[in-house]
Amino acid sequence: LAKTTQPISMDSYEGQEVNITCSHNNIATNDYITWYQQFPSQGPRFIIQGYKTKVTNEVASLFIPADRKSSTLSLPRVSLSDTAVYYCLVGDGTGANNLFFGTGTRLTVIP
Amino acid sequence: GAGVSQSPRYKVAKRGQDVALRCDPISGHVSLFWYQQALGQGPEFLTYFQNEAQLDKSGLPSDRFFAERPEGSVSTLKIQRTQQEDSAVYLCASSFQGNHGYTFGSGTRLTVV
Image (cartoon, rainbow over all chains, first blue to last red; front, side, top):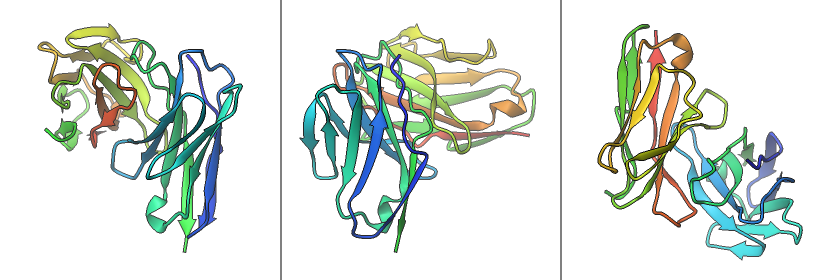
């Protein structure tokens, strides 16, 4: 089961770009990298998923280097509402291996 | 439904009481997970279903915890003889098979007093 390592916390000012890096040295060939966002009193919410190179959606971008041993979630121009805990997960998505969340990165956006 | 629904939203149980937590996944979703989240921690895996089959229950902390999904849709997590250490948020997530993104419910906050 591939586990991940992320910074425990980060602070950023409103309007800045935030990059959160996750290490996953034991990622398997079939594993995808998925990021979730969690607000207090809510369940985690899917943000973005990728396998290699770069993925972009309306919320974020995900950068994955060629060796796939790390990944970076990029949030453009954060706002106060982006204050949350962000989790990086790796897995093959079949459910055969469970989703390992770790402790996540607590992002605090400062006005 | 539009999302994963969990009930009750909050549950207070006296120590030793049995509780049952319900999860209504998104219609048609094959995979279903249960997670336990302690305050300030990330969710921790409890068990996984594919349709009605419980394929992995390695995360259940003790034999007081039992989960079922008899018809492959609604799932129930039962905790017998609750203890204070069982106090946590219990999250349910579902996914359509082959979809790598999982949809989580808002959870049930269990407080054992």
